[in-house]
Image (cartoon, rainbow over all chains, first blue to last red; front, side):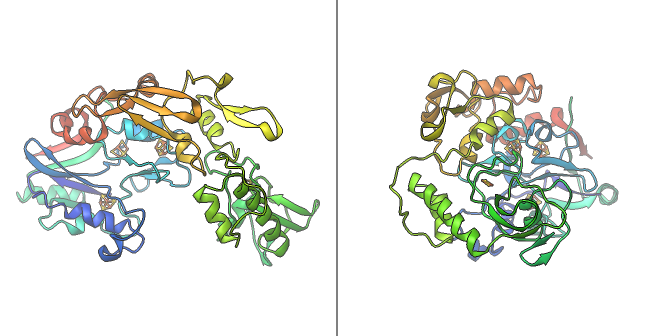
Length: 167
Length: 250
Ligand code: SF4
Ligand code: SF4
Ligand code: SF4
Ligand code: FES
């Protein structure tokens, strides 16, 4: 099963992923048209500083996701066949409880949007937009087996894998 | 069933609205929400049963599908009645953007009825969402023209979590929350809720009753309590080792 892995050492903080994500979730899907849309399309990936280094973070699609556990409406659920935590705009009641419980802080909510926003791993494309846009390959879309192979070759050093564990 | 002259197979136990939207037919709704189910109060989703046990206009969000039903969602009679329903709502809430939009789609510029300057259409979404969360902070009082949604005894709510779901769902924007310093105020419910500040950036963000509610459900990671979502991302470095299921380092 493929996952988005984050290489902690590579990110340069250019925020290409943030931009690509917002554009992918716009109506027109082009940067030119996206910037004049109302509401403005929103990003689902965030470039943050960690231990003095930049790195991108988006939903980890946790196996035991606290956001799924708290969601009373059933809007958030885990699609085991694709190992994804999915969100239904139609079912969401906008209570924002998931925003409060996500250990990674990657769900956002804004008044006016009615619902929350989170990574859907780009449901309309094969390779997620953030991965494709990263100029230095800090985001990698691959499976564990492939990752191990690359790692043995010494190309990859420090990778973020998987999501939340309940202690 | 036959919907708009098209023969369809609908799932048993579904409603006319569900069957129609499965076919890609759009029926406007106001008081319906997927997670909260039908309510049948706004009557905007009217359709006509042309042939069936009880022919006539029905609310498609509540009406169950039946074998052999012939339904029309867009004929003159439906549109005429829907227009009147929306016109009445527009007269009640002339300032609601959502109802203005709906009226516009139906070709209504100004209502012919006296304007009321109300903001609530009594769709009950706020009441139902609060019940769904298990809080029941607001409800309907009285009947007829004096009917309104409010807190028990019209006093500040003692149970409101401050989650704002009611405001998110309200189709007319009648419920407005405002955060002023460490208070989250909601005039419609005459209620004010204490907000806890983020322990890192000191932004007031966490309604105290909501925090208690989430603590009881044991879904707050100890390292997270007191951190707003932005600071939760920013402080990941120090927390990664303890919250991540797998981290790989060579
Ligand atoms: S990272 Fe946050 S949003 Fe994603 S599955 Fe885990 S708890 Fe849910
Ligand atoms: S805001 Fe939506 S997705 Fe999040 S917990 Fe509430 S209903 Fe579920
Ligand atoms: S996978 Fe898609 S939705 Fe998720 S962060 Fe990347 S670009 Fe955004
Ligand atoms: S949506 Fe069916 S009555 Fe309101």
